[in-house]
Image (cartoon, rainbow, N blue to C red):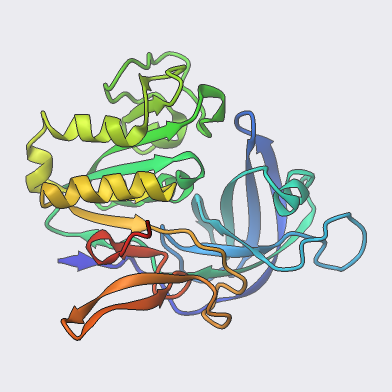
Length: 302
């Protein structure tokens, strides 16, 4: 039985302030936003950030539409809430974010989307993320720990200096062996398998290949696991295919270009299998029907 974590259809526009905005690795930063009276939210959901001055004054950003960012963590203290946003600096919006300093105001819309479900009958969770697909899995690791699940994370990047995680200095990272080697996951008792395309950290090659290598000598995973994955589409497709071949439940967190995040603009369509022969597929919206989908329902684009 799948249980969707407690969430709410309530959403709103909130003016937050920056508590911290620090670099993690070469291109990634973690921004911590403080907001009051933020509605209930759960891992897999996201916020739309206005990547320019909410007062309309100053700054050089030409980003007019809000940008979607997965929530990487959420901590509540009375009526105040701290939200973690982990992002890679690539375009105009994220370059604007990278210039923010503590105390600066940021406008967010959220929480948005459907969160990851938790399965009562699956005691083991395998989390597979590539690059900037890692943020929702960090918060998910905490949620699953709180639900009494055992978790293992698989984290990939092109090279060691693009892995957006904080290493624990006293833990060795070798090959395909899981280790409590990164603070973001170690805090929630989640060992990590690391792979880099160039072999500069952990196993050499893709994280999808490392995940498949882990499954074969661990047949218990087939019987007791659920897989959650977020990252590049080719990676998620390999993960989904490997899970389907082994009858493992798999939940994918998709990413699409989103102009509104609320289903109004209809720009973030995903092809989903239909339930009847005369209805082989239909479009669903990533922002409202997702971003989390059962991998068996997704029609992967060539």
